[in-house]
Image 1: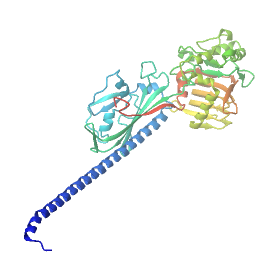
Image 2: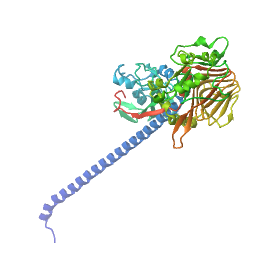
Image 3: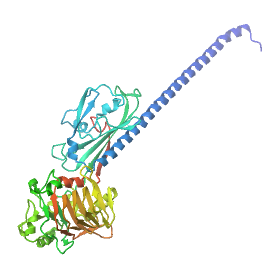
Image 4: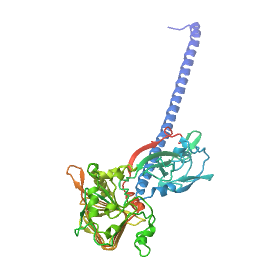
Length: 497
């Protein structure tokens, strides 16, 4: 139907309004789609940044874990006190407020090998201007850390726990902290946190480790058992040329002690120990009384003087020997009483067999061989009987799970443990042990447990045993460290982070 001119004029504004509304709607949809696109682009960039940072955070953690495992292993055989007392001058590149000494934040702060603030913000591949230094005790890595490659780096620091001696440079209980800080470079300008450009992702982990001090012996010659039998010749002691010296000899060597002159007595250090410690955990039956009787009844008059030490027994011709069982019970060392448990001792032996540096098969004659030095002590493990001597020497921890025969010249610095058959025949000439010796017969009960029996020893010839606490520590320091606790450090955990 035809539209009149008047009706056409009336419809024209309506059509213009509809076209305007459509245009406005299109514009609004376009703006919304644009904003959505920008939001998606922003989220994508943000996700990429987060993904990048999370990836680098994982890499930083891997770097820290690498440092932890490396230096945990390297601590075996080390002197903790020497490390704790060592001061390293660490470069300082950023000005920051250091917590006051004696405060809770400072306790945590002092365990950090480098400050987390610097670890996050310093480009260690292109170091900024040095503004000072910070003194750090117990740093195991170089001051600028160990590099793992591709922007990774870590620092490791040893710290003493609060062991009650008020001295964080001296270890009193074998427990300590190992803190590792790892970084992974993010590149400058990747992200901004707390007003600063974050160049590195960081991860901090800390473990409390313990050195097993079960074998922290107090005598140069320790016998464990209900009694003791001769290993050869029908006697525990033959001749009058041997010497068992219960005085400590700090800083001395066998060359010092066995040379003539000077006499080893020149180097005596006052201690409250005996030449022979007799141990048997049976308070209801007099503990090591029978073992003491076996030793004393075999000593002839002149031989008693060859057991020399600050503690003597009038009932044993003034020989230096004591029942040390009760001393072990009351020892402040929490590991001391482990020695009463044959199963514990044999578990330790089996664990050390796995990490031994030198392994000798049953029946090995190792005469003339060397088993470590003071600079490079070794764990030596003999799976059964072995023969040592012939000009051989060694340092560290030597474990024999059978009978040990010493023939001819042999010098050892450290700790010797003879278990299993528990037999030791030291009848050779010029045999010297500086540190400590533990002899015990262990019996397999067939059900996964062990018990003790009577060991067998013979001391003769020019056999010399000299107590040295540092030598004993050298031996047990090679034992596998025990992990007591582990944690990752975050800002929520430590206020000084």
